[in-house]
Image (tube, rainbow, N blue to C red; front, side, top):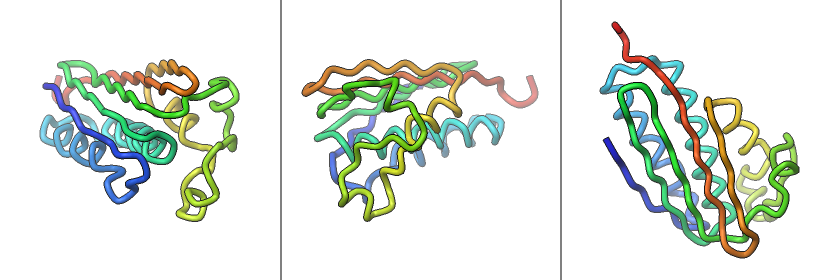
Amino acid sequence: MQFKFELEGGNFSKAGYASSQIKKVLKQLSIDSHIIKRVVVALYEAEVNVVAHAWRGIVQAEIDADKISLILQDEGPGIPDIDQAMQEGFSTASPAVREMGFGAGMGLPNMKKNVDELKIESKVDEGTTVRMTTYFSVKGE
């Protein structure tokens, strides 16, 4: 199964739509609730990062028999130093984003904690691609 969602920079009212839709599908597939929670946390954090930092982005999700693969591609400022951005508490969020309760610098670390594989590629002034994979087995197998 494949899904695609568009993200709009600055539109926090729609942040989380992709993760809520994917959560519904995973529940329908009887995926373990712990796996669902991990996937949803990671995807939500990634969505918020796109909305907070980029002009626009796309979420692509592919659900296979034993894994879910998520790719988020955005057009935005990019991440100059990925290693630094992976540190808990590091944030480049604007004051306006922080006032809304986002930008605490936990997005990338939370994504890493909740997926089995995380790959980030970024070019300054162009954008960022985040690839996340989580493996699972269907209940009863």
